[in-house]
Image (cartoon, rainbow, N blue to C red; front, top):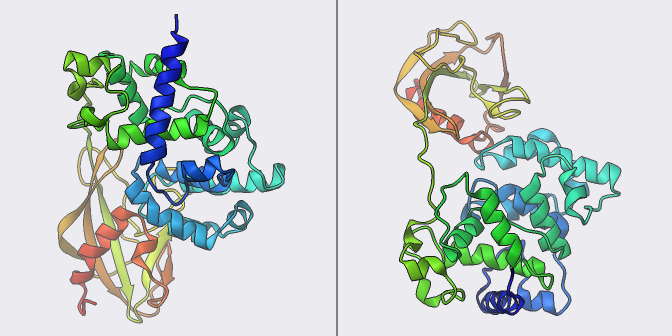
Length: 359
């Protein structure tokens, strides 16, 4: 049975720590401003939460600021060209998030009069918003008492309770532990406080237990096991896939690019024509146009969630009347490597020295 006095004290201790130590983020309303009546922009909270999936605050900050400058509200984003949004997203990875970002914005405008719903269940019904993101938006943007559990929160709960079952099997139990501590008062600040605690104090390595607001009740600290938690099931080795990439430049400086299918890995992104990616060995050659292709020294290497990729690279200089079977020529003045996903930029970095007159 929960000790309500102890529960209240823990929440109060954490919120007092957060009031003094909250991280500054461009999408966050500081606790003092929130107490004074300021409210978060649900659009900014949603955008930040989608961007933060599978990446870090440091990686997201610049992307978020550029998105907000270019598309300051959900109506502006809903009206944006798909290709422009995908290009702005390039480098953040997990490109299905960008496609769902547009779908969600358009549903919010078309079906919710441009306003995000304020409950977890209604938010989760929107494209690209899963259980965690729905709970985070409901708590942070609308102060709903929802249980928000990311990797930081899992680590804090595992240590606080000295729970040694490995992830991912331990997720349901850790979520229950987090739910038992979630207060009705200031749930948005509390959700952010636990995440900040995990990100800055209860870190994966060398946790700063001596300055933690939950130092006294932490069971793992008492047991000396904090640095070893949460336990994790060993990951399986990732397979290696192989492919070929073809970088063609026309004599006027235009590059031959193609947009990948909407579904699948790197869906909707601009990239170089190439072969299939196969597990066993290098696939057959599949040049997009007949030309004197030259192999470039080295290979582009990139790691995705489930596999490592190795791309053999070929370059060719094409005549002005070249007629490829796929893709489009992008004029030199419009070509921006930054519009492509990271793996395609790696290909370009190796390919550019292979041309007769490298740039």
